[in-house]
Length: 167
Ligand SMILES: [Fe+2]
Ligand SMILES: [Fe+2]
Figure 1 (spheres, rainbow, N blue to C red):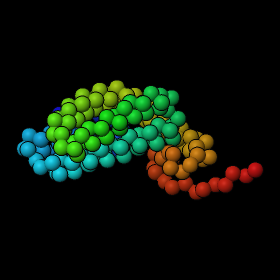
Figure 2: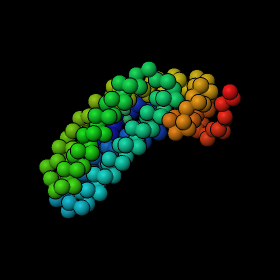
Figure 3: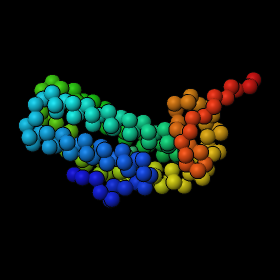
Figure 4: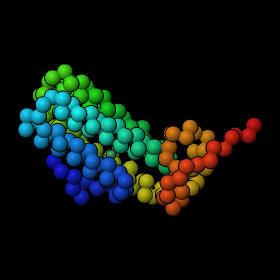
């Protein structure tokens, strides 16, 4: 399964990350078909897991920064996949090649559904929130710096100054 415009969520950074994840899944599918040695298969699986984990964290930072109302529901879906992927990775590492195919099939279906519904809803919210983000950043200033992405009202990323709370 390849990324196509039907998977677009219209947030360019996130679309790029989705393409990477689809590509990582396709690489595993190809490796399985070519009977690639287990060590190489593990490398590919770990790369996919790392891509997915980074991507989910990125989406969750954006949703937090924008105060997305369905964050909890969306994050629960990510949590399920994080668990599944690490279980599949452990099985593959133990030499179970069938787990590789199961992983590919599971993720292909999950990605198509999740990007089409949950990520699209989030993308629409983030685009609408863009103009309000200046305000969101002000409110988010009391949170740990790594809990959200700092984006100006124009949508440019920046590193905020640490402002001490006055008592
Ligand atoms: Fe997502
Ligand atoms: Fe996503």
